[in-house]
Image (cartoon, rainbow, N blue to C red; front, side, top):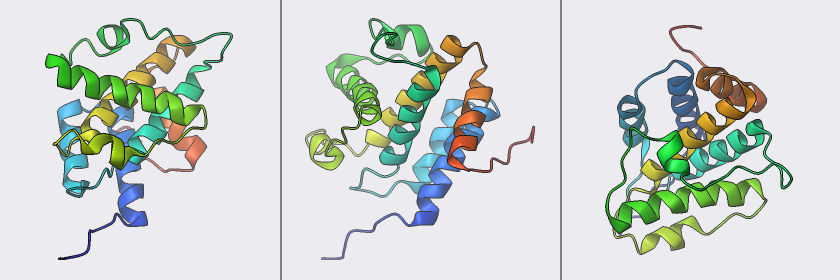
Length: 167
């Protein structure tokens, strides 16, 4: 049996840059997902970890606190109206990714591989991208910035240089 491939530090950096540069330039989600999919390693949660950590950063950018929390009631309908999740499985997966980003922000890191193993599908990274997009939109609304500005702010905080057409 061949050893499981693991992402390299360069793969992790590429995933972060692809997601943030795509969002900072206003790239369509399908294009960003296509680029991230090329990095995905079968039977591995990568690049979900990076995307969920970026979503956690977006929660931080939003200024959410226990005294001023993000209202999660109807959050997907409000912040991802163009992405319809149908069926119990898609609803559960998207809610899981949204919740995990909040857990990470609170300092609790779940066992992603074990949690997603029952899914019988290798797509946690896709739902993690949607959690990132959702929380960046939340941060934009709460701060009065654009999605592009929030993505650039997260990149700046992480010391990531984004190369976008507008750069």
